[in-house]
Length: 316
Ligand SMILES: Nc1ncnc2c1ncn2[C@@H]1O[C@H](COP(=O)(O)OP(=O)(O)O)[C@@H](O)[C@H]1O
Ligand SMILES: [Mg+2]
Image 1 (cartoon, rainbow, N blue to C red):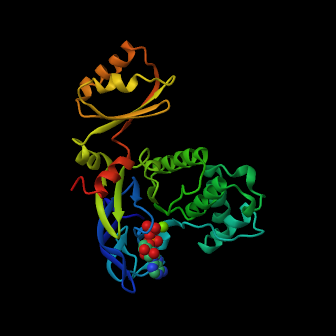
Image 2: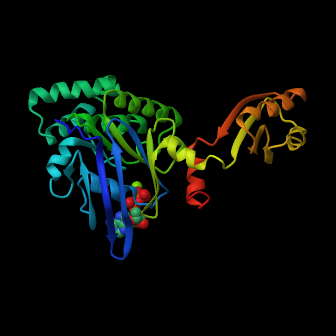
Image 3: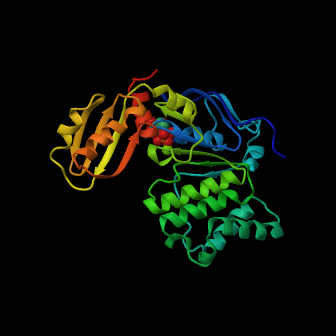
C-alpha cells in the first residue's frame, strides 16, 4: 500500500562528499505524487549522486531522503520495492534475449513464477517490445534498449520511477516516443523523477523541476512558478523565413519593443520587451513588406532560457 502523503520523495539537507569534494552540498526538496519531475543541471552538478542515494545504492555523508515516508538509509529494501531505477548506463548483457533479460530482472525482484509471466507480458505490451522478444539485447538500437530498460524498472509495479538521463543519446524520433511513453506512465498513476542536462528535452512533459548546479539547488517548484520568476525579462522570438531577406533586419529595427536582432540565413531572432497584446504589430509590419515566415518560436517558456537566466544570476 502506498502512503497517502502528498510527497512521494522528500530530501532533507542531503550531502555527499568525496574526499574534499562536495558533490551534493546540502539540498532539500519534495516531489509530489503523480507528477513528472525534471532534475536538471549541467554535467557534474550532482544529479547521479543524488539519484543513487535515492535508489539506495549509496549512503549520503549527511542528511536524509525518504521515499513514500520510508528512509532510504535505514530501510533500503523497503525503498527498493517502491521504486524502479534506471541507471545512466546500460550494462553488458551479451547473449541475452529480450525475454531472458526481463526474466532475469523479474527473478531479481523475487516475483513468484506466475506473477513473473504476467508482469513480463504487461511491461512488454506497455513498452511495445512484443516483436523483439527473441532478439539479443546487445543488438537493439539505443531507443529500443531504453524501452527495455524502462520495462525492467516496471516489473515489480513500483509507484515511483527514477530515471538517470534516460533520453541521453536517443535520436529525435526515439526521444519523442520515449516522452510519449513517460506521459502514458504518468496517466497510469506513476510518479517519474528523471534527470537531464539537455534542458529543452524535458520542458514539454515536466510538471515540476529542480535545477541543480555545483551540488546546490538553484530553483525548485512547479514549472509555471519558476517561469513566472523570470517573466519581466525579455522574451526572445525566433522566426523562420520562407526565403532569405536582406530587409528584415531593417524592418524589425524600426519597431518599438524590438531589440538584439540576429539573422542567420532564414532564421531571425529578436528580443521583445513589449506586451503580448502588441506583438501583432511586428507580424503586421513583416507582412506589409511581404516578408513571409513559416514558423515562430517563443523562447521564454523553455527551460534552456530559464536555466541560463537562473544560473547566470540574472534572477534571484
Ligand atoms: N565516486 C566518486 N568519487 C569522486 N568524485 C565523484 C564520484 N562520483 C561523482 N564524483 C564527482 O561528484 C560531482 C557530481 O557528480 P555526478 O553526481 O555524477 O554529477 P551529474 O550526474 O550531475 O553529472 C562531479 O564533480 C563528479 O566528478
Ligand atoms: Mg550523471
